Image 1: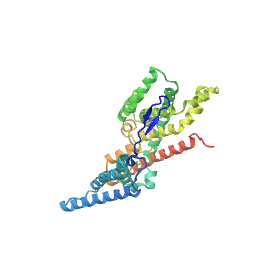
Image 2: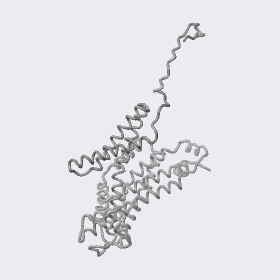
Image 3: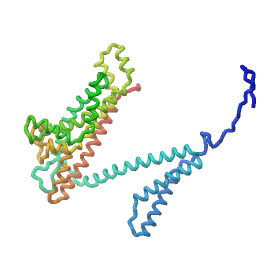
Image 4: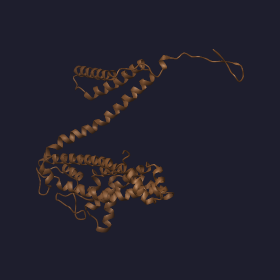
Length: 370
């Protein structure tokens, strides 16, 4: 086909190429039921294969192996089907989708397994005696974990009171004020503190208080200081990221109205990022509430109630689980039941903290609608 160029009055050849129907974006698609049918067929075939092998060899049937082989077969079959019907791009998309979904399900297996195990073993001692009594003068069956619950709540609360103001003010300094070498040094130290082992935090708190109270000191406040060493870097890093997400336009609009910087931070920056900050604080609490090693060194363990953080030893739920499992008496099943019940209670407390964090984030997050 020829066309005349108006500027040079010379014919220009235009090539008209036919459209390839196979390369069009809108092509043939598999039905929505095809992936599910393929998955069911792959699993049935894998289970049948493993059943035949188990019957032929006389070995035990492997459910895990059958599921893995069925999943691999599904990925291969759905990719080939999609490649023949939908094209290469859709085949790659379905293959990656199947792999990501499989990785998610594989990651959920240990979580579900742990949950089922803890619930099935710990529900037997979830009674009123467990929540209303301590282990004082108890050598066999009975007893409870009231002293450990009180100790865990008091130590964690004290650690939160210490960590949240320090971590939040540090993150505000790094985002709003920090410049130069000092800010870089603080960031480096926070990153280093994030990776320190928990036992090191316990040794630090024990050595610090041993200088003033002598060797062998065991108090709840020492455990709170050890946990705060682990909480502070988590609070700093999470709060810093949330504060950096606040748009600079909000700060500039506040400054343009003559609002001082400290009031802008208090009234604009913090309310805007309160949801993320609260989530970070809850994550830091969940990070330390199950720590055992630092509390063994700093707070010790006891069978009696103790409501004073600044006097004598104080029991906590993680240490309670450890002592009940490690120091089994007669009958042994009573100690194991108390250990599993305390582990279940610890998981429920962490779940309650996360739900509470979501509620706080919902209540205090900025409302953009009218």
